Length: 400
Image 1: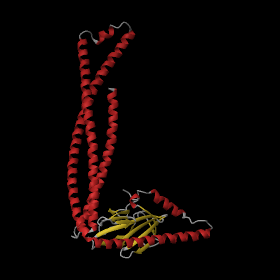
Image 2: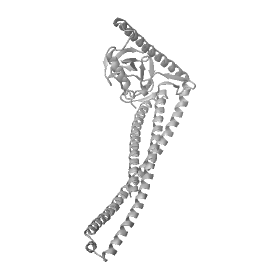
Image 3: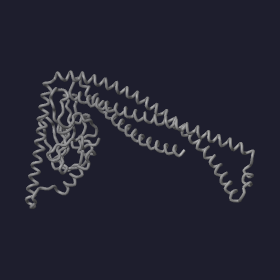
Image 4: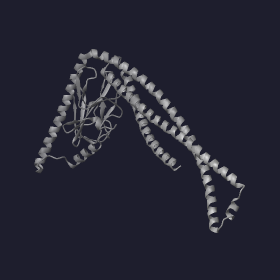
């Protein structure tokens, strides 16, 4: 019985750990479902324009990525539930075996008590003792024997109740698993449909190679202008710092105490920075990667593209000071905010609400994101993070 109790304790701990992992999987699944609902909304907005566009293709590609992730999560949840079911089935089997053994032991005690009841009474058993000490021991023995029988009866009832609880839980888990498998089939069917739709999109878009090459050159020109502006800011501020250092007699320029604090706080919030939009999905990632349509053409993104709804606002991801607000030729406004050593860049804005020198706080609205009415109402914020003149991957900084 001690072995059984130890085993039950270990199994309870295992189920507790697995229960925590199941909760995490379900939270992740709920979050992915929310993102899928949002991309579905963006797709519905985009499909109001019957033209096949790159923006529509990118949103659909993100939808496929999210649905694939959802199916992977469902598979993991099914796997954990499968382990639960196996463990509970084994536990029910073990408990039933223990129950049968206890019932046999208890029955044997009852039979023994009945047989000996006619031979002598408890009083006679005590009075027939050779000494007072022996009589005392016999009283203790009878008391312990009665308590033992009582505990055995209670233990039998406890195990019966536990089996009932486990059987009910087992049935619930099997129902949950069946529901998940049905959900997985539904998502897999939808994924197949979306991939087929994506294939049709791709074939149509590949026929517009010259149009995409022209747009790519325009985007490269805008990116180059942004990079030059950022480099100019850095050079100007380094020059100012050097002049200040000369006046104060320092050998090298240094940040102010306030700038050092802001810079350190910004770095400490890596992977925890809020998104630069209230709701959105990343439809173009950082770095060099294959163009989604043009064959053998690579594109470079100094930040990320975040697709959102028409009229969405851009907001500061951290407190800092506005270094520049300028117009990017063909690309609306861009705002650059300094956070100590770090710069955050928000481009494709209209109705900008800040100006150079303004102090901004975390999540403060800085402008409205521009919408391209000629490209199925595409509303995309281009967002970058720099550490002085080194480009950072924003996905490694903003919260998941």
